[in-house]
Each structure stands twice: as structure tokens, then as C-alpha cells.
Amino acid sequence: MAQDITNTRVLITGAGVRIGRQIAIAFAQAGARVVVHYNRSEEAAQELLGVLNDITPGHSAVHADLTNPEERQTLIPRLVADGLRINCLINNASVYRRCPLTQVISERLRQDYEINFVAPFLLMRDFAVYCEEGSIINILDQRVANVDPSAGPYGLAKKSLRDATEAAAVQWAPRVRVNAVAPGLVLPPPGASPNGMARLVKRVPMAEPSSPEEIADACLFLARARTITGQILYVDGGLHLVGVPLPEREEADYGPR
Image (cartoon, rainbow, N blue to C red; front, side, top):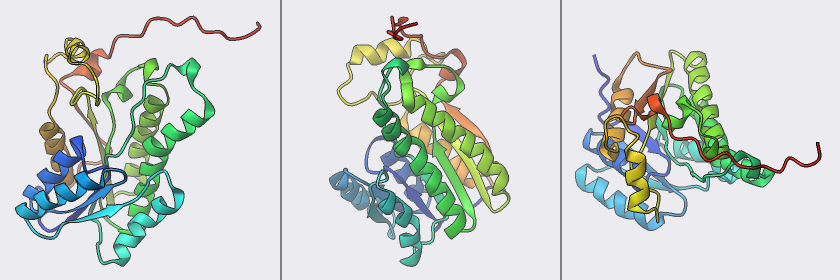
């Protein structure tokens, strides 16, 4: 029997815009109470909060810079202290920047790992410690199933989060279920050309991008599934089965040999 999420509380990081926004709306429509996390998107988060409270009352918003250790480590304890016990954590916030591996510098590596792996992993840990039981859903990327060197530190960090998903699913069972959703092509990056998106869609077996609503439905399914843990649900039209085209081989300067 599916788990009823009515009146449960879900914390969604990066919920103000894009996919996170649709996930928040879907959970509110399912009867959950949403905590909308935001960093720079305060206006969008407050607008979303109004939309959610028009659906059902009881939603809230919280600010935290997840790259700031102090703000990150106090996020969940602060919510719990305010009486907002979290039943489901959705680690959605991330930053994607293409970068060939030979161009990676230590600061870029640190920044990309901080938001795409360190922050969601430590929120997972805090959820397990302070909330005791419930469900965690990590938003990954279909690239975790194949090799895309141009994804650089972003791709490496998402694969680390995939591994953390599976490790935590074993260690924290049966109190906490830990799963992941791995989207493919959904929304074009801000400023991207329509031609670029259309070219990528040609590689998708289902011949179209996935929708934010499909990502949200996948999250709802995993939140309700009482015995499913350690799973990665690919919502990508089959793209992870064929991968992305490799970039042109770069002529790297490796220095003296």
C-alpha cells in the first residue's frame, strides 16, 4: 500500500524556480506541506509560496546559502527547532557548468563539489540525525550512467551523490529511505539557443525532452513507495542508454614529458 503523504512536510532545496518549482507544486497538490528553500531566488520563492498556499495552507519558505557551512549546517536543526519536522528531503539545488577536465582548477572543483555533492550529502546526514525517519530523494542527472568528460566537476559530483544515495539507503534502512531521480533533457539552460536543445533531443530515444511534471511525478512516486530504497529512477526518455556524443578530442598541453 502506498504511503499517504497528506500533511507530511517536505523540504525542497532550490525550489523557487525551474524543476524545483514544479516539484513543490506537485507535493502541495498531493496534500503535503512544502518548505521552499531558496538562496538568490527570493522573489520567485515568495511568488511560489503564494501559489502553494492557494492550493492548500501551511507552506513556508526558508533562506540558506548552501555553500556557506554555517548556514548549511543550521538549516535542518533550525527548522526542527521551529517545530517544522521534515518528513521528506528533496535535494534539488545544483549548478551545472561545462568544463573539460584539463581546464579544471582547484577552486572550480571545490565550488562545484560544494553545491552538487557536499551540501546535499550533509543535508542527508542532518535529516537522518534530526528527523529520525522518512524519505530522501536526490536529484541527479542521467550522466551518472555514462561518461561525459565535458560535464567536468559537475558530472563527478553527481556520481558521488549517486554513490552516497546507495550507501545511505543501506546504512539508514529501515528508518530512512534514500532514492534518486536522474533527469535527462528537461529545460534548456538560461540563454541557451533553441537549435542547441533541438540537436540534443535528436539523441533521445523517445525523441522529446522530459517535462518538469514528469520529474515531479517521479519524486511523488518515490516519496509514497514504502519499501523502495537505493533506487535511481531515470526520467530521460532513454537518454542514459545511449549517452551523449563525446566532445572533440582536445589537444591538451600536459607539459614536459
